[in-house]
Length: 514
Image (cartoon, rainbow, N blue to C red; front, top):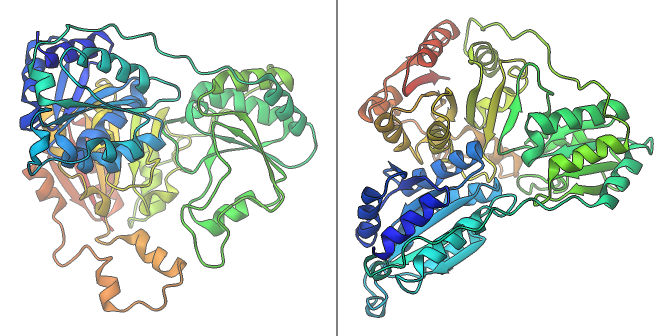
C-alpha cells in the first residue's frame, strides 16, 4: 500500500468520506487511491474556489469535515477566498494539497511555491508530510485538528513521492475533542447583568442560532426582558414557524447604530462585540454606544448550548414559554419585481426543511423578515465577506443533505466568481434551485462609493461597477453548464418558475431581471 492509499484509508476510517477535488499531476497517485478505496465520494469542481466553498457548505450541514484535493500552491491560492470564508464560519475542513516530489523541489520548477506560507494565514494547522511512512499519521492528525471546536481548517501538504512510495497503511484517528465547558463565573455574571434593570442585548452566533440554542435564548430573553439579536452573518441559522425568530445586526452602519442605540450591556454567546464591515469617514467602527459593556457568556470554542442552559436555570427561565413564531406564512406577491415582493414569494413557496444558501447581497437584505414565518428551514450566510461563496456553498449543502431542497439566493456579480459550480450541480444531480438576481451591476459597490465619500463619480468609475455591455445571459450560461432555467420579469412569472424549480429534481436556475 503506497502513501496515498494509506492516507485515503485513514480519511475514510476517520469518518471523512467526501472529497471535493480539482487535482493535477502531483495528485495522480491520490486520485488512483480514491478509485481503489470504497467509502469515499469524490466530487469534481472545475475551479478550486468551488471545491473549498463546497467543503464549507458540507461541513455546515454535517458538523464534519470534508476533504479537498488541490494542486500545489497555485491551486491552494485559487481556493483561499472560500477557505477564508470557511475559517470565519468555523467550518471544519481537511485540505490535501499536492506538492512536487521532495527531491524535485530543489530545481525550482515552474509550479514550485511556498505552500505552507500560503496556507498558514487561513489554516489553524499546517504540515508537510516528510515521507510515505508518515502520511497516514499526519492525515489522522489533520482530521483531529479540523474537528477541534468550534471547527478548524487543517492543511496537509502531500509531496508526490510521499504519495507513491510504500506507506504504513491507515492510521487510527483520535476521538473528536469536545467543546470546553462554560465558566460558572461567566454564567453568574451574565445573570447579574440581566437582573440589573439596564438595557441588555444577548448577541448570538454559531451553535447558539440553531433551534435548541434559540429556544433557550428565547426563554431567557422572555424571562428577563433582554433583547435577542444574532450577528450580521451566521454559519447556519434554523428559522421558520415553530421556532424562535432572531433578527440580525444590519450591514448598513446607520441602521445598525439605530438598532443598538441605548444599550448598556451585550452578553456575547459565541459572538464578538459588533463592528462595522468597513471603515467609513466620520462613522464609528464599533457599533455599540459609548460605554456599553460586553460580557462573554461563552467563547466560540466553548459549549454554547450548555452555557445557555446554565443561564436559563440561573435566571429562572426554564419554565418560561419560548416566543416561537406562529404567524401565518406570507402570500406570494404579484405585480412588479421588488426586493420586498421577492422576499414574500420566497417565504410563501419555500418547502419545509429547505436549506437556503444566501449570497443575495444587496437584493436580499430584506429577505430575512418575510421568511421568518416560512416553513422550518436552515439559512446559511457568507461569514467571511469574500464573494463567490454562494454557488459552491449550495453545492456542498446539497451533497451533505440529498433529501433536502437547497434554495440558492444569488447575486449576479458574485456568481461569476464560481459559476463553474453549476456544472458540478448538474453532474452530481444536486437538488438546488438557484434564484439569480440579475441587476447587471455590483449594486452594493454603488452604495459603497457614496458611503466612503468618494465624491461625484464619473463614467470611468461607474463603468468599474457595471456588469452590462454585454449583458450576461444567465439562462444560456446555465444551460451550457447542464442546468435548465428560465428568465422572469414580473412576480407572477417568478412565482410560477420558482415553483417549477422547486418541483424539479436536480438543479434549476431562475434568472430574475431587476
